[in-house]
Length: 466
Image (cartoon, rainbow, N blue to C red; front, side, top):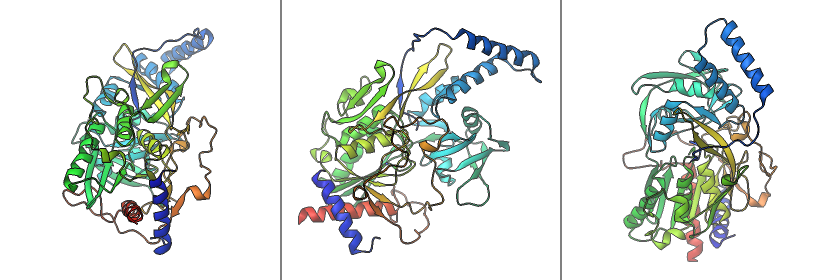
């Protein structure tokens, strides 16, 4: 364990006893083509064509060939795992646009369970976020249409629409006795993926809402700006990945590389085909896009050593888990919060000749120490009860999703850790209600997670001074 982590845990324990105890888009990598080496299953295909013909001839209403074929493809992919899917031309275009930071919709990352749509996380500054939709909410109706039995793609398509048009979702929330409705207005979603501010002199805060094309570059500018505003190196930094549904893999590597030594392992993947096996490190070729200038080349030296706390929760998924897992395993930061979502699979976008594509799970992620993220997530060093989530309102995680992949290491979805490995900080009083943030402020002053992280960093600084 690094000196910082030892001091951090010691500082938290000292504070706790002295005051009675007051981190989905899925990762994307383009492939040009896929090859099939096994022969076609003739008998099974004959059965498929027989069923197709029966539906065409005998179904109560006429059905187009296009609908039948696309629905069959959807069913084939969605039965594999929660993240493999067929993308029609519109969905494929939306995905490409979405990773650049601007797209149309409500701004929620969703999954499917028992035929219903479940919210993984709302994206900040979107209609869904402003309407108060929370991770774990179950969508049971879209306008007047029941969601039960609807494919995930169909549900997503119904939630999309022309910006400025209204939509009403009927939701179920654990701990709330009856379904309730939320009406929103669709919008062009412009997501600013990196927000930051100095909390106190010497202590910085950075929030990443989603991993987009320019997230790594934006983060580099953020830490440089805070250093300039502070007129010197920071004493501590909070990296907030709560409710960050993920995004682009290379951006996650760039974020981790910002704080790691050059060449340090960030994540590795394992799949069936050789090109699915990758080792991604804190080196430019693993986080830069073709032709991009290295945005980490001129970072001040203090960024690699500043004491850090990474905040995570059950809405931290995919790329968020890669970053928090890398910083945890490389002994670079203390992870604080609640166990993360547990999405440890790699989705590859495979374009098809007709302008559509399939999103296919092709590999699984492993942290530098060899831990699988899948259906387990990242276990924080310091576990804090979420003041906005009661024990009967536990949010959805990967392990709750239908057809989820099992953890390849055979680890239970409820991690078994030694008591001394996790410090639990219970909540003793109900937190004050959330208030709108004033202009220029990116985090609430009464945010329980942030205040605990800040106290920890200040405690570490005090112990270092002594």
